[in-house]
Length: 243
Ligand SMILES: Nc1ncnc2c1ncn2[C@@H]1O[C@H](C[S@+](CC[C@H]([NH3+])C(=O)[O-])CC(=O)[O-])[C@@H](O)[C@H]1O
Ligand SMILES: O=C(O)C(=O)Cc1ccccc1
Image 1 (cartoon, rainbow, N blue to C red):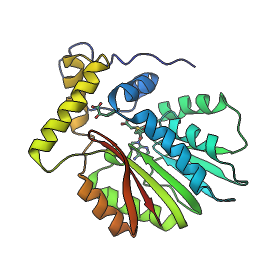
Image 2: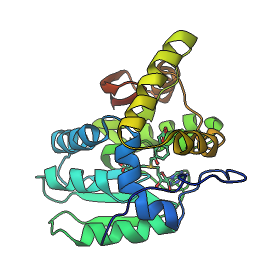
Image 3: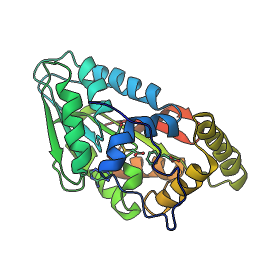
Image 4: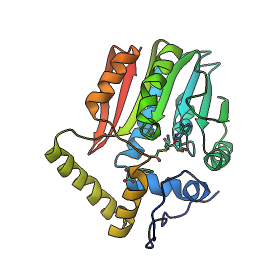
């Protein structure tokens, strides 16, 4: 197992294709997400702490859009209850393959079921804890409400959902000043202007961000009466919702 530096957008491309989670991206993903998402490490650590708080004996925990398994590993380290299992799902075969290697590199009493599937097609049952760590933003916007409803239905009373997302701001001035902070974060992490702009073109059609207000409305529509942002750095936020 090795992780390489992300230089996917370092050379000028004639045409920037839509971003996909293929083998090439999977191979550099740890580096890419750390250098692109401010607060990522703190959020993943927090997900582990929340898992420790919400895991109930003989229940399931879900990591939806698990990529290389960072959130699953963090959850697994904090589960002290008996009879828990984690279901980690991603529809990228390249991610699932590498995720399996990461999980096998550590020992744990908590079993992980790794599923290569679309999170819109899986059943969610007997869940004490569900994680969507930067995954909902990749679903077509019209499919997001149904997924949150399915999660709410699959959660046990007192169970929780963690939803982390890149936010968009309806106020244009705020959008611009906070986006500048994110761009500076990427520059400080060694991304060139070319890399930043080509990546931006690659994700603009596949990652449609919502405002915080839309997320709050979606939680309420799904049935969640308790929800709050628990972490935010610039335009990246993580929310907790409790059934
Ligand atoms: N419909 C879908 N069904 C299943 N998987 C999907 C779908 N759409 C996208 N994905 C998967 O969601 C993941 C999003 S990355 C999550 C990071 C991780 N949670 C982490 O804590 O490190 C976030 C990012 O790249 O910004 C990718 O692995 C996709 O293949
Ligand atoms: O890179 C960015 O600018 C982002 O907004 C976040 C991101 C991180 C990893 C894959 C896709 C998007």
